Image (cartoon, rainbow, N blue to C red; front, side):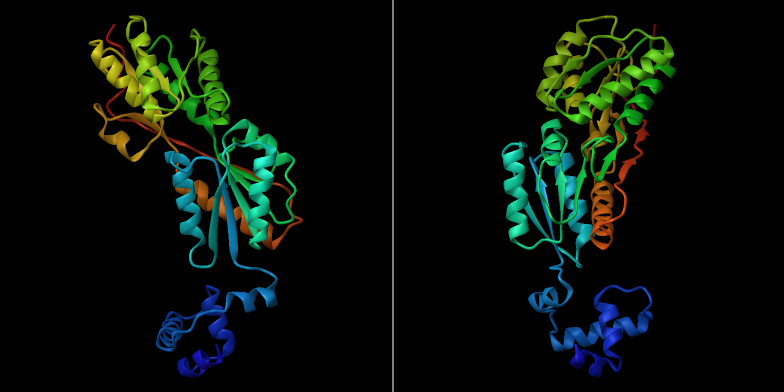
Length: 327
């Protein structure tokens, strides 16, 4: 670092501020320091730094299924926000029980991580976290808005309420709901928002049909709903199930939105290219990851701060799959 300072013609402290991303460095000075770093091939010694600071500048992430769009996108948001200051170690668990969760935490602690983020939407995962022994800060993401620990989550209830209210506002007598697995916080909270909107409007509350988040489950459910002529509006707990529903409706000759309006949840990149383009509730998975990282870093800096639960507002994106009923 002293060599970099001499070559750049600045102080040792200025080099340190540049390396740590400090904002109070003039752009010209920062550029000169970075040029000197490149010329000298300077690399920080992470081991030596950790001995001085007591921190490894590494974080751990625990997830259950990173093949699903939501967890994968949150993980990407965490990694992007952490780079270049922190390295991220990812570990997955086969089941979200106390033993598996503790084993995953222990693996990460063995690597000296400064903090842990858990991507968790299953109820057992949230319950398991309550019993985990961890001596570094831990933040949950995607776990609903009432988890008893530091957490960041989309406001599912508000999003489902707005989607249902929107369909009722178009003139539909009621809204049918295709929910996700009842074991997940997301599915239950979205069901709560859907039901609340119906009851506040004095509309009938149909029986909930459950899928498993997949397009195939939406397709199977769609055959039953398509055969019910009284169905004019359906809210699906995610976009993949809405995709399956759209196909089932088409196979039964029910046009969307002329005969049935459909709303999804998530706003996956493909939803704008469904036929018709899907009206859906957008949640910014990348921002969920970034906010989880910010909260974790706050905790690393101040472990005595009170627990925080950060609900992030969703956004209703209106496209061509919804319209007023024709009769």
